[in-house]
Image 1: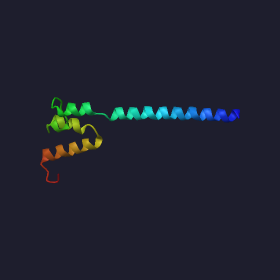
Image 2: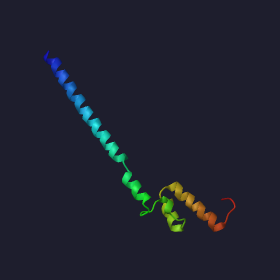
Image 3: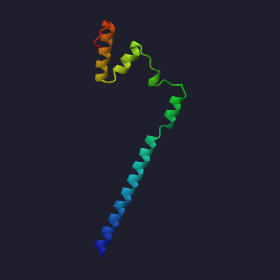
Image 4: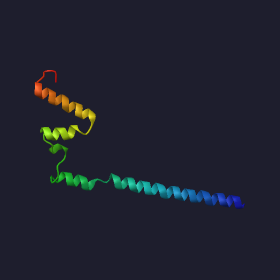
Length: 88
């Protein structure tokens, strides 16, 4: 009988810890998903967003530098601009 009570207490303790952990994870995920302030900031027009980027060489180099594949595309674009190639 004492073993049965110990098992019940241990099971209850584990279940409680599990519930508390899941609640904490869910609360953390909800906090991460709330980007209302960011959306409001971007809509206000006070900050630049990706839609505000010009097609200047400097801006394109910054964007192209984010990934190797994008950098390859930038080099191809610049090559086409320099040589006015009809293959581009």
